[in-house]
Structure formats: structure tokens, C-alpha cells
Length: 99
Image 1 (cartoon, rainbow, N blue to C red):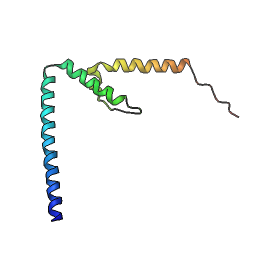
Image 2 (cartoon, rainbow, N blue to C red):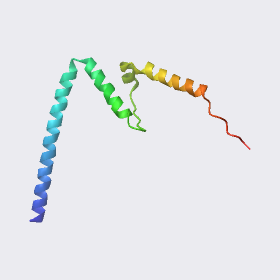
Image 3 (cartoon, rainbow, N blue to C red):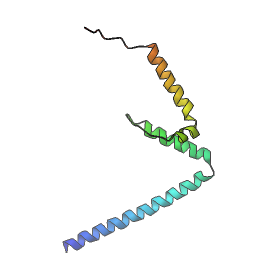
């Protein structure tokens, strides 16, 4: 009897998970339709995904270069790196005294 109850609970859990997957797929389908003819909205959503992922401390995201280029972020990121390098060069760390 205990095994039957366990099997019944597992079956119910799998059915619930399967139904959730169907609902999730339907929501993704609807979201995709809303972005289909609105490249600006898709672009903003992609930028938001990047922002949300990168705001975590120590986060690292690998993004294909064509995505960065399509968002126009290459120039912005290059300018940010150049600014950081300029600031580092202007404020060099003091050399430690070697004995």
C-alpha cells in the first residue's frame, strides 16, 4: 500500500510539472509573437536581460560578438574600457619599496 501511495504521489507530481511546462511554453509563444514585429522591444528586452545578469556582483556573461554589434554596445564598452585605462594610467599605484 505504501508503494502505491508513493507511486500515486510521484505520478501526480509529474502531471503537475508537465502541465506547468505546457503553460510556460504557451507564455513563451505569446511573448515571442509580441516581439516578432517589434525589433525595438526585442532589443530593449535583450539589453534588460544583459543588465539583470551583469548587475550581480562577480557576474560574467559570454555574449556572441554579433549580439554586441547588433546592440551597438561594442563602441560603448570600448569607450568604457578606454576610460578605465585612462583613469588607471593617471593614478598609478605607488611602487612598493623593495629591499
